[in-house]
Figure 1 (cartoon, rainbow, N blue to C red):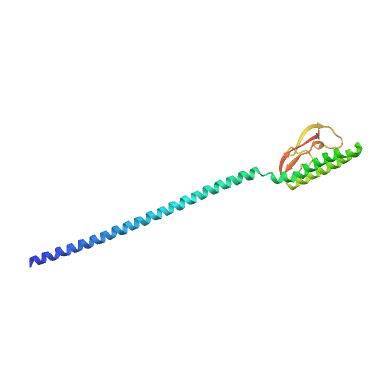
Figure 2 (cartoon, rainbow, N blue to C red; figure 1 turned 90 degrees about the horizontal axis):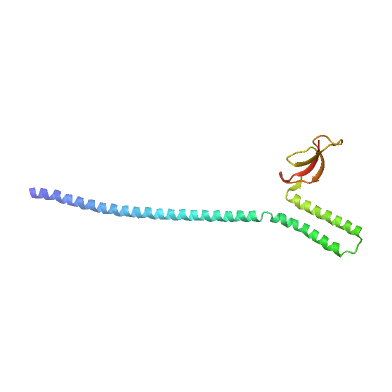
Length: 184
């Protein structure tokens, strides 16, 4: 009987050990499956990251290229609006050489053509926010450049007496200050 008693516990231990081995192998298989799933997920996320980074770099390059083109062609609309002015001047030169008229009539036609051309310039400037600097009233160093000071009984001290060159501004920025003389 003692033999039977001893054999039974040994048999149970072997069965438990074999069950534990089976469970351990299953755990290893599950662990390997889980590791391979995690590695696959890591690869997928790395791929997504690399693609997103490449898309970002491509967009950055495209925006930089568009920015450079915008800077390069920023004056295109303005230049296109000045083309009729050049055409008018060229036509004035051609028509003046083809006319058989007196010099006074020719001079009048040239003056008229120049006046129309100047008006075309003003319209093109206005269209693009370029306007004359106001020269009425007191001297303002932000908009005017005093090149001389004169005495005058007609105007008060610091007022603009004469304009030598017109000033222009684009929106609120000065392109060129007006050159003026002011009263002492």
